[in-house]
Amino acid sequence: MTSAVELQGLSKTFQLSSGWGRRRVRRDVVAVDGISLDVPAGQAVAFIGPNGAGKSTTIKMLTGILHPSAGEARVLGYTPWKERRALVRHIGAVFGQRSQLWYHLPPRDTFELLARIYSLDRASYTRRRDMLIERFGLAPFLETAVRKLSLGQRMRAEVAASLLHAPRVLFLDEPTIGLDVIARQELRDLILEWNRDEGLTVFLTSHDAGDIERVARRVIVINHGRVVLDDKVSALRRQYLGSKILSVKFHAPVQPLVLPGVTTLKAAEYALKLEVDTRVAPIEQVMAAVLRAGSVADIAIEDPPLEEVIAHIYAQAPAGAG
Amino acid sequence: MIQATRKYSWIALTAARSNLAYLSEVATRALFLAVILYIFLRLWQVTYGETGAERLGGLSLPQMLWYLAMTEALTLSAPRVAAEVDQDVRTGALAVQLIRPLDYPLARLWTTLGERVVRFGLNTGVGAALALLMVGPIAFSPGGLLLFALALPLAFTLEFMGQFLIGLAAFWLEDTSGLMLIYSRITMILGGMLIPLELFPPAAQPALRALPFSSIIYGPARMFVHPDAAFLADLLLRQGLAIVLLALAVALVYRAGLRRIHSNGG
Image (tube, rainbow over all chains, first blue to last red; front, side, top):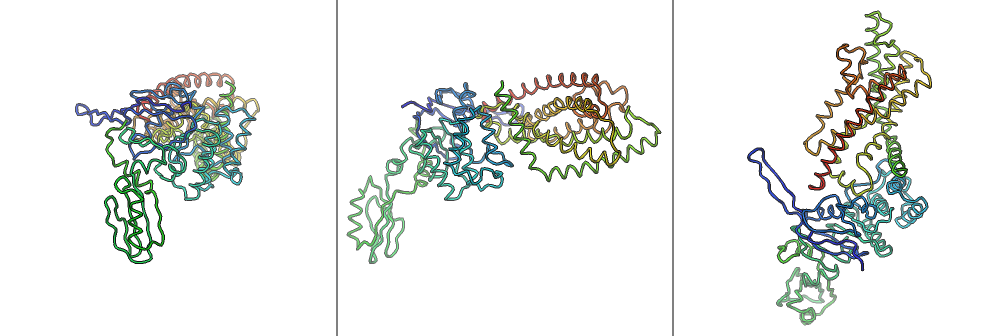
């Protein structure tokens, strides 16, 4: 499979200076520290990390805004900072907190302008616009000034606008920030649909575990400018924490369960919520112990919430990262 | 080339349409214009009365009021380019603009031209109505109006470049609003917004004409009340020269700003 985004030892060091005259002190701050990765075309990747981890710096280098201190990067075969003008015709970007729609005009007017900005051929533009209007459900508010739209409607129009020129890679920075549950879900589904149906490579930055879980198949965690984890989203919980949450309801009161590798998160008279470290205590062994403890009315095995997993990863030292 | 023309003219058109949404602002400007023009009418009536002159600086009283209506319409139609560019630099919006196949200074220029045409059109309408009401019509001819219209695009571009440079100063300065205040006041005073250049001390006039400020306000307003092909040719030459010099300055400063974005991320 061809690569959409390739990074080889990409680094960025900022020089910060403070003070005046002889007291002026310069110091180097390493924002990105030798990141290497390969994103195949058509993959949806969540690129996450705590604030100041180097996410934005990396995205700015991949879009040609920022020049790296060392290393190489190719996006769709272009070196972003050398061939920015050629590259920008093939990439799209959505910044949750920055709009490209004209505030006082309806979304249709921004679409018309974007068609000219990207020099789209009229027939293919009309076809694509109409398809986006239909798939994103924009028709009811296409002629309404953007300032009168709800945030959910606005973000749908925003993403549709960024797809108008048929980009092959879409960078999304916090696209669901501020959206309600339904609008968030709708937007995630649309991005996912586009990724699956159109083979769009998605590079998503978000602090929302739901975005990562729903949209991405692969998650890359960076911290202190380095990749600390690069894995499938589905494997993230299992491999990284190796724990399960076991919620049990009993018909009669039970005693707390004491087993190595099992932590009681919550204990009520008729119920227990346990965190099981499956590397120490296999889940079937814990289940057997639970069934022995009392008459079980209901039982549920869940993965720990992704937020917790991510928080756990962020808290780790970047040792052995690459 | 054709595609670039389509792209940037469409930006101007979109900006013009977007600007029509600010109707309340238009109404406020119209009110402000009415007050200013009334005050100046009274002042100039006294001045013409006291001096007993038919013409001052070559202009009759009605021409003087129409001149003022035009200088005010020009001044009040200037979009807040410096403040917007300043914000683009500070918030990183300028850096994000680089992800689109657009040249930022050109996109800004055409946005400003689009906005300005709407604002200037509305201001001129209000100013002309007020001048008609206060002193009646002066002699206009289609040819004269055409000469006047020719002086406008370069005046707007020149004004844009001054403000754009001030906005770009945000790369290095904490606050550019002070610079903008100085620039706008100098444009008003030395540009002939209140008094035509002919009424300044004769010794100062060559210097004032050589400065770009008079090409932004005085020149076009003078063409409006007193169309003159030779004056226009001289004005276009001055405007063209100032634009070439300022374009060089914009290119240098913008490139330095871009270097900061490329090394700091904006």
